[in-house]
Image (tube, rainbow, N blue to C red; front, side, top):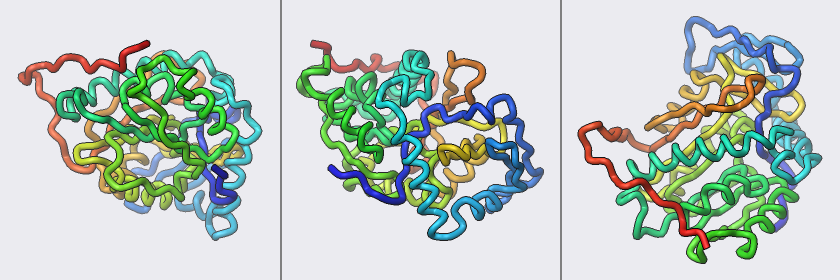
Length: 311
């Protein structure tokens, strides 16, 4: 499958740049309007009075937007298709990342999927899948089928190899089904296919309008009761623009404003623990298309969801 040649977006794996680290104290306006009046800075230290000012400069016309996505994918085309490569030289965070994600996913499956998915054919979409790291270490053990969405062609080819049946240790009932070499901003899922759409370290490559458009399209790809998991770096406040790989690290306030524009509700969130101090904070959001009641303490606890049987 050929990779699209323009308007590409790809994986912002731990994209806290060396320039931005230690200088991520961003000023926030007292009144945050729908127009996103939040101050921020870029990795060269330049300050912006709000996000609109920054986006006008970066993607203010069709050519600039085309360059934004091309330059972003161009950065990752020069990165090795390995765990250490896609994690920006921090391959050792793979284990705590997967461990925390699995605990969060287990909780969500038990609370949101009838019978925690037992006796049900579960399907997930891994957005910004890279070399298949999250799929292989986590998703494929819980879902019967996982589709991978990744615009960087050599990452996706590595994922095909990594997820070949002979390289997996799960039963035949669990497989990587489809490999889409397509950017997020151009992808439209099949209607009602997915129980979970997992989006990790890639949404920072989307401009705000494409962020909202993506989620609005992706909502139609969820099964009834399905949900999103967004796992992403967090700025302390406002935003931090990475000039090198063309990605934006948003604050929690910034994300919540965009979720509102997308028509999404935060069902649950959890902060990642165990990462090096010099990296951005990382948060997981479980997002639903309707307001859901959280499981109360008086509700009987279900048996913990079990992953696929290992061969």
